[in-house]
Image (tube, rainbow, N blue to C red; front, side):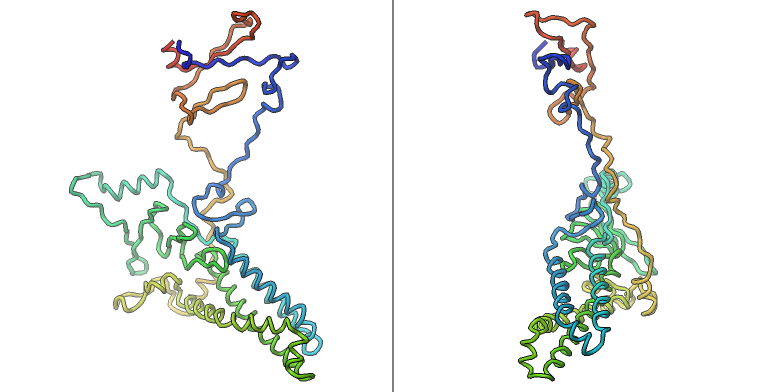
Length: 393
């Protein structure tokens, strides 16, 4: 028998003997460690970051999100520290109460938008992807040399309007209506609106209502802060000149500058999404002109409920669909690949990925009595070999 066709493993000495190996089965170092189950969020194929054991899901680029949080917190902190005490005493004590309510509501909607699943569609399994590819490339199971595969699209009818379902080459699925693939997060998202770096996440079916409430409350907060800061400066300037009033409260000047340059863009964004909400459209559909009347006389939005109030109720007050991602679920081992394991001294060594012979291993037990080697002082040996090895022997 050739030396490479078998493996001789010396048997460990008794635990009490002086020559016992430190890696013997009885030693604590040789005991197999209990492997923690792998969660599905750890193997998620998209470009996302997860926190709190998969409970929080965000995009990978979150630098602008932290800047958004810092800008809101610092501006409101200066307002509560320098403007609120003066306005509460000289104007009304309701000023800090209104400010706290707006700040808490704005931050809660921001975090809910940033930390939630926007509606990611799971990718097809290998079997599902192979079945879809087979249906596309070879319909009816009749291939021919002159055959050209049809376009990777399907058509469905929604409220009398024909909708084309496009095939996603990354997720290996036909995207549902209103879904699109985000190139930044590398996921297909249901009712995809857009990817917003300011919130650090995609905006889709499951978090659009929170995004809309965030920009709406942020616009109100910005207008409220700007009005209070200007009132504070004017009230101080009535007792002294305007320059002295700004010197007495330099934080108010900084707040006024930040709010002045932010309020216009925030108000414009809130107005644009109010228009989208009342018409039951998405940013992606509006930019592409999917339901524009210029495309055809019979082209209309099949998702409109027929009125402004009904559209707002459908977008903002409808039931929230559960997440399609089982992020905290345990990854089940793939049963298709064969695993070839050879036990050595009570521990398992997987050889399937290291050139092991793909046959089932068998164990040859040693005789009951220990046998001495040629020198007479060696311990017994156990030889493991496969069926193919036995044939060679």
